Amino acid sequence: MLQFTLALILTSALCFAQATADETAFPSHVEVRSLAQGHYELLVDGEPFFAKGVGGYNNLTMLKKMGGNCFRTWGIESLEERIDGKPLLDYAQELGLKVVVGIWIGHERHGFNYRDSRQVREQREAVAEAVRKYKDHPAVLMWGLGNEMEGPISDGNQIRIWEELNTLAKLIKKEDSNHPVMTVIAGIGGDKVKNIIRYYPEIDVLGVNAYASASGVGSGLVSQGWQKPFMLTEFGPSGHWEVGTTSWGAPIEPTSQEKAASYYATQNRVIEDGAGKCLGTFAFLWGNKQETTTTWYGMFLPSGEKLGTVDAMAYAWTGEFPENRSPKLLSLDSTAAQQRIRGGSSQTASVKVEDPEGDPLQVEWVIMAESTDRRVGGDHESTPPSFPELIAKNDGTTVTFRAPSKSGAYRLFVYVRDSAGGAATANFPFYVE
Image (cartoon, rainbow, N blue to C red; front, side, top):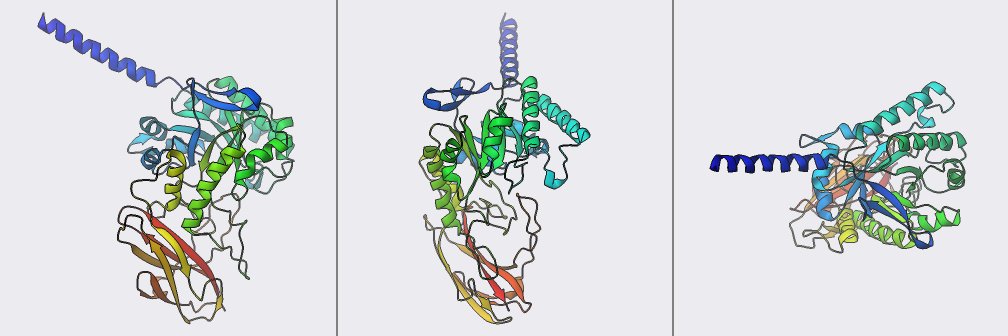
């Protein structure tokens, strides 16, 4: 009798475990619900969901810890990445994070021809295959059908692109009725919004990438006649094309402290300005990349430390800062900053920093050549060379350095790290005559 009872208990436990495992295999049902007065909300399995998101999938445990609930990718190949031995979607599901699954759509500036029937047919087949493969995963929030495929400086009059996206959205909805379709555009200038309204009616959510103008995206869309919901799918510091420049054309990068303030302000303002149409935001970039400089858009240093922009988003999402905050970089000063100087000359710089918890700080100074591999639309750029031999004396918050002997544009970077995985950074350009 005891053996029978134990067997029954074990069998029941196994059945329960199997049922639980099977339940996690069901897709989430995600829908956009229209509310009164032109307002909208996103529902995930019947529960309201506002996207507290980021672009990128590094440091996902920290994203969850900081109060984020989702992230977006740009291409299906990202889902083949493995973290701790698990596929990306499985890893996200374990953390309780949702994913806007990006499906890369061809850019004409990269050689895709929307008048080539073979290319168009192959792209349709690839989209359908991707949706069939991943549509039942419970971590999927929605489909990100394309990212800035109209081009970063487009006026939005490429009607063939919007018509093809409409066809692709229909195709996705035929394959999957559980997840909305969002397409991401680069800003709302020109005739983009007008033409999307006319030629792309199947779109459920409009994603907008914007930087200095991000906080006004909602009212800007409404003024152009947009009546559906939107998401702010990239935002962060002012873009390198939106800031002041030196006399030789080098853009002046904000400090990490200035960027943190920008992230927080944008997050709050875009929701208020969104007038009930904003379904969420995605801070950029939850990771690091070379784009104009090695630090302009990354929310982490290349060596992995979090910057104040991460702390700012944690506060925006939860109303509380992390237990240990990143150092605050208050100023970076030098007589060489944004100046033309003589080759081989001795120069100094100083940084003023403080740490909220009083942690010991390590200061690193780096001289790099100005990037000459400038691309558009976030395309890959090579990292310029650095010159460690030019740092003559590092006294922590002050440095003595020698100007390069070769004429050209350079930058002096400062990296401040605490003992708890936090950091701050700033740089200034200079020109050697």
